[in-house]
Image (cartoon, rainbow, N blue to C red):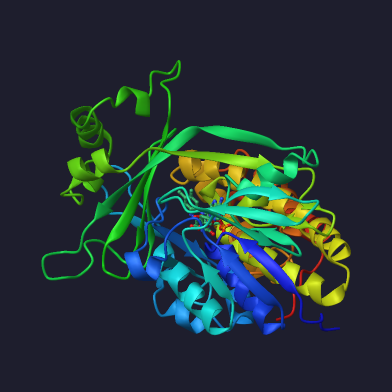
Length: 459
Ligand SMILES: Cc1cc2nc3c(=O)[nH]c(=O)nc-3n(C[C@H](O)[C@H](O)[C@H](O)COP(=O)(O)OP(=O)(O)OC[C@H]3O[C@@H](n4cnc5c(N)ncnc54)[C@H](O)[C@@H]3O)c2cc1C
């Protein structure tokens, strides 16, 4: 059933807001998008955080649903796996999947946002920049927007508001004044800072472009993702405060000299690639990382939250945007299926909340894996066994990373199967140093016993 032409006011024209605008316009909805920042197509992208993002199948599927995939992929760079930098040895590529059909893509946040804004506008969405949501009267259905450049405000009438205004959502705060949303935030002890690897003098990439580079160092790490202008964005993840173990922390790196000393000691190969280290260190702030949990995502038929506004997560699975894009498709589908907005929003929340909770937990688990385990012998043996079991039991033993990244099965199902598979891998490899001594009959029997055949969601 197609919804009659109606109106939605989307708060935030970032990644999810712009994509939702396209999807809704294609379904005949009238859409107004209000964005606190200026138009990035006029004044350049001032995103302020995480310059590039890993795009995976879930996100690409949502982009295809909006006919946006081709335009986005024009800017994307393939990442086949993790290139792990340890000690003085040559970095080694750990493939994410079996071949180049199982990869992820690095996309510049600004390019992606601009492509989606152009498509939203072309589809007929009305875009309003320099308009930050300031106050909402849910009884009279009037919202006040403030221009952050001055002090002017404007008030608009709405039928319903959709909050795509990110982790610090102003709409969420306004809804909370009317209904307790049960909000909780768990901030990580770690923060992040971004630095840049520029192109080589001849214009090429300085290191292997088709990989996500990792410099794991136990409780902290650097990663680097390629950009299509032949740069890499390096992100240092480090505790905010020094702990009892005396390990490094942002609060000890009080100036650029101490930061440089730290890199010379712990990340010399990365530092050698960052000629403007001092400039970047001074210019880029330390970002916070956390998980946002809400009991309720909507206020009857008057407002609903999605993406980071509803369920911000730590970035260690590279799924926050992918999940936000899945939310957009799910909300559009519920709007198709229900005439009544309250029912559509309730069905959206009921359908997506278990999956958001699952990817939030898996993102925290992946944090430990990337930080502590990618160069650890037990982990590498389990990873080798995981790939062998994928071949021995196709469609039954599907590696965790593949379920989350290359498939579109619900995140909650991926999490349940991951927990079962992790148990199999740990039991099978306990006390073993190589694949040659494993008890294959027992492992195969356990796989058949615990895991059913798994099919992906049809296209
Ligand atoms: C370091 C880091 C790395 C990441 N890496 C990845 C990755 O590799 N892959 C991945 O999938 N995800 C990644 N993420 C997560 C991803 O950035 C988010 O999940 C994604 O941006 C969420 O999209 P969104 O549209 O919900 O929110 P946002 O992208 O935050 O967009 C919100 C928009 O709302 C606007 N806004 C804010 N307040 C108001 C207001 N009051 N009124 C109007 N507009 C407002 C903002 O200006 C912004 O444009 C990463 C996050 C971080 C921090």
